[in-house]
Length: 156
Image (cartoon, rainbow, N blue to C red):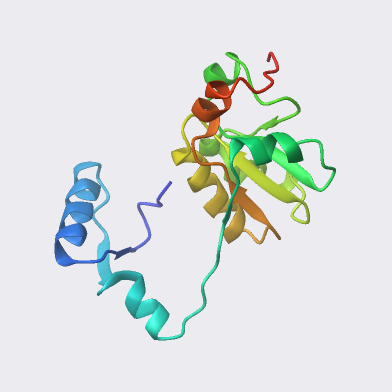
């Protein structure tokens, strides 16, 4: 999801985290690491710089709120994953193509993102937040947790 033509700045709590992140980025061809935030988010907060927050919903809260007209549930998994079942009435918006499809989403409704386990959902939530969506929530555990609790499943 990073643009290889733009500089990369990292946030880490210590030099070892920065070193490991830089090494992993280099391994995949992203070599424009141009700086990092020393002492991680602590320095950011101590400087009084702005913070953005992304809410968190459990799968139970997602299930309770999925029919709310103010909520748009986004399944950001790959198409082949969605074919195995999905949250009823969820809209498919594969995270890799999410930036190109933002105009089809309503920035004034709560965007609730879920994926297989929660990792890609957090990336999708960050994209929505960056693009000015009013309210964004991530669903940790996502599809794994949804199935574990035998919540309703819609076929593709």
